[in-house]
Length: 252
Image (cartoon, rainbow, N blue to C red):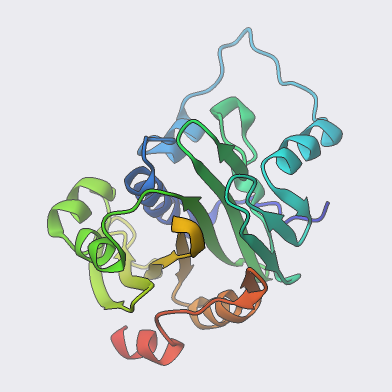
């Protein structure tokens, strides 16, 4: 199975991970991850007596298939039935293939009725963007309720890493969807890029709610966002994005 291997986390990955963790925590009926998981991955080594299990691609593939992965460019939610297909510019994000941290890039948790897949966009060397698709039955009172939550200063303070400067740049709501655009900066890295994150919620049929996250640094944001909108299909159709790129560009 083809997938982009993120061998170098790079200058952009950790702020993105902080955003992703915040989103998953707040969208989940129960917490499926912990804030600061990136630090846990890097700073909490296994006990000395532990030995690394040999990589078994057959076992890995079987686990991911059980969680909804059809092949290297297609996924079907095992609990809710929606489908996601992507172009060759996208792949399963193997950064999350860390079983020792209870992480895998394709997850289906029946206890909390949630299905998740993590995808990675690659436009070339050191050009990456990240997307999450999280399906579940719970939401906060429709699209308008999601925007109200995501833009609340208390939510931002509680959910996002205190090491990041987060600003809401744009918000909008339709009958069945809503989105918020954030800018994110790391004060400890003043020369680093500004990154941008979009949270979008879509109400599917049968009471299913699909939460989407898109994150990219400023230098690749346009190309990655346009690919996210046009090269990934949900139930056989391109994403009906709340924001056009022109909206985002004007808000930057």
